[in-house]
Length: 270
Ligand code: R5P
Image 1: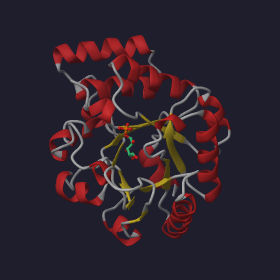
Image 2: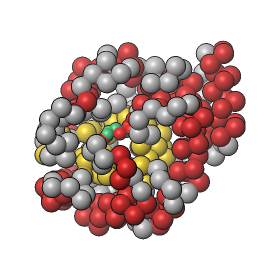
Image 3: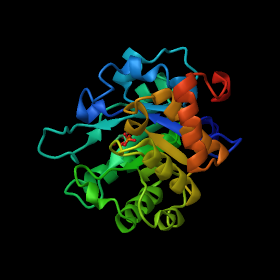
Image 4: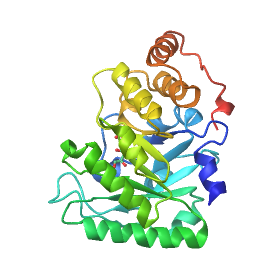
């Protein structure tokens, strides 16, 4: 379990920059992720983990990659269906192990009609994770109710996920995020959420989350919907792994935008 977890949360810094590209499992061909391989390949050298479904893994990720896989194993609802929260476990643990997943991920929807079902999914997955030594990432999803992203709600959902046995939790950044961290006894990573207006906003989000105790990010749209995704992910790495300030991250981003040259040797990222 620790061995797998430390592939993702790097022991050298205790932090991680995970690349989230699992959006298609409920959103279909999301903007700038229409052709997953094209989006993923340039970003992989700078990712400490790739969060994706088995379908994207099979079709769009080179099996020779050494980037740890965080396999999304829940689904069953879509943005055009009746409810985004009605999820089940869609991928067997056997398949997760077959594809050499370093962790498995599923969403829980606390406070919705499918709260019980998704928490039961988490319990089942943790039982299997314990059997095979595979960490489980619980995603405290909010469905379409983005306004739910406050410390009270996220604190409740994160703590519940940890109590049921999640080994790490993905949540949203919010005001008073430190309270969410304090109440959650396992590592927290933050999602970026929908694309923010500017890159600076995304740097601020990452910087505040780290400053308040997150171990990293599991970021998607704010990286690959940026005009310069490769520069963007490297600037985010500066914040996460080197505790760079927002201003320093912005400088790195602007510099890489101009030169296109890699700041971090590709082999150093993982
Ligand atoms: C949503 O449930 C998905 O798991 C995404 O991976 C997650 O929202 C992170 O991506 P983004 O940074 O685009 O929000």
